[in-house]
Length: 485
Image (cartoon, rainbow, N blue to C red; front, side):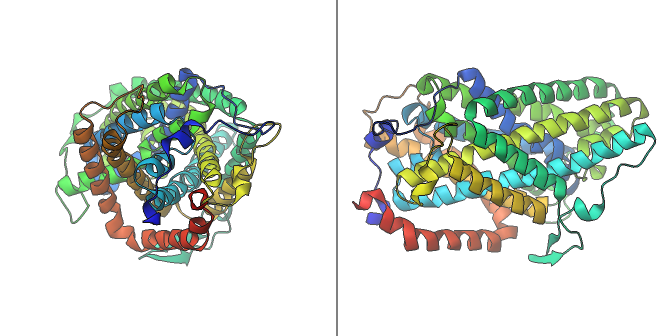
């Protein structure tokens, strides 16, 4: 039964209580900062990288429906996150919520899945950033009448996944991906105030670029590109309704990040009020943008041609009168993907911080920098890991693993709300999920269904990741847990 011992809710309520002189996280974030963090994390890879892949390979023009399905699943999970975040304003996100409701073993499992979500997401988006960066360099060189192209050996992953196996590609390293991951890790080390400020500027830039793209592309939409809206099935997961659902499991990656808002709860000025606003507000805004953007992209170009690392820029290349916008989109994509990496790297060290304070990982991850007030050790570890993954692995496999880890975390949060309503009905809740049992059940079912869509093809990678996590838990975490004392 020790596997399912729960952390007392009061322990989370006292998360800010420290010994005299102990350095803590700094409460500086407002609702506006939190919404910007959510948009910064969500608007990025989904529009600038994954939309084209999902449309060309799985859903066709019906990728719009894939975004709707994934958005509904996220909306149900988002309601549950909002209640938890208003009730337990701590940095651990789904890990802490599981610890309070489902027990230590489940909490560890979810914490391990969150490592997959945040760290691998930072690496995945760094790879996408590299594709747009090299495209921008090419565009600048073309405008200057010279070649500025970077060698392919320095902009591609040296490893690829073929039939479930890692095979060498002949490349050396994805150098731009390594550079951006390193730079953002350094910014996150410096402080949450600086990170939030830079993120707000980046969010403004990418929203302006997205709206410019949609506004100037409307005149080139050809309704024939939307026919057939759901292409005829060509096998499991390839077009038809099965392809739409498979596409939903892929573009779900586009929504991850709204939950990263909850990792900043211990740095929010008024978390009980502002956390639900930040989580639900950013999710609603991003869902509308995704649906509109995917409709425009598949309207101005046949979906079969969008399967490139930079589908938005690819679509613009078809229209000479929009080439001026192509460079601007590349700038917006670089900015947008940068903010995603930033928020992911803000989130993961704070989850490590919570896990360390509970004794499940070594104490060094719970250290706060005396000057910058950031979990600096965790930031360095996450940064180094993201750099290695981004430099060596391709975007496809990384993205699938991130989605699976996220879906399991979301499902756990959905299950936890009805449980805590029954076990602790007395807890003050600044935000309450309407029809909590129904919303929780539907949210968990939707997330688990989308998880299985990816698990069918990547089960061996996920099983291997879970096995490593179990070794760590039973070898270290269970014995060092503070609940053991």
